[in-house]
Length: 420
Image (tube, rainbow, N blue to C red; front, side):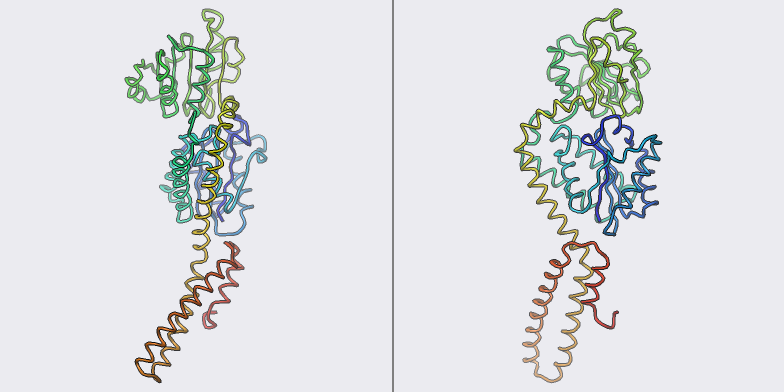
């Protein structure tokens, strides 16, 4: 059965989500441990700023034991002092399929219709595939999710308005500062998230940019596009007092800017407002920074109220997206169910054809060639019709079951006595 266990922005605050965040280097060992301890057949792990989800397939009708084992492993891996199981959700069967399709198409995102998520899902899927952790079931599932995303994007207006966390965060900055003329922006971390933030500010005009990255060459590569100055990672703290907007978008996994860093200069030489935008998970800016006078800290869940207003304007698109997701999930489940029944279908066809051939062989000796060809043609039509009828009834009766006992009984019903 296909299943998913996960935690996201709807079920847990950012401090809980970041506790269960796994970077790319940790996902492989985590997946291998889960497979080893649960005997799961296929697995894909997705971990982003707003969710950590484990998609898996096991050739059994129940996933309860696997879910419990996965949650236990996650807590052990992160050395959790408390139990956060209540923050996790799980789905199985078609519900799990629909959930993935919603995630990939952006219908389940904090910023509805966001563009980053499909790339993150693709990266997670390809990473598991390279590690030989996927096979036919999840391969087909994730390919279908990408088809679903394409349809949702082309057939709805779900991407109308802000389409990424970066864009929403920059809109907050623009509204807070009212104008961007002569504002100085310090970006720490020059990956895709940071670049999207700068793109949005650049379109508004008037900003000057300073870039800092652990690998300086990455910052040097994009600096000409923004007319930006590059400073080393060790130097960026010295540019905090002179910056109006400070954006962090790194995978550092720790606080890079503390309360004492900011309070040391605010009020003693700097009095104009300052905005910190923390787009990192785990967060890079200490939460207490937001309590300093004239300082605004925007991070993760602070953007939820902004995105809620965009959600109201997208209800019609979401309804259409759900229709597409429903259609695509039914297509996938039809393939999945037929795949489970394929051995039985082949058994039905093989046994009926064998009986037909045996009877025709006996008949051939006692009739003319002309009569034999007519009887053979009639027999073939009859065999095809009865096979089709039995297969149709098989699909209806089985109703997509994963129950091995029921499938075994059905096999016995259609199997020949000598094969039992």
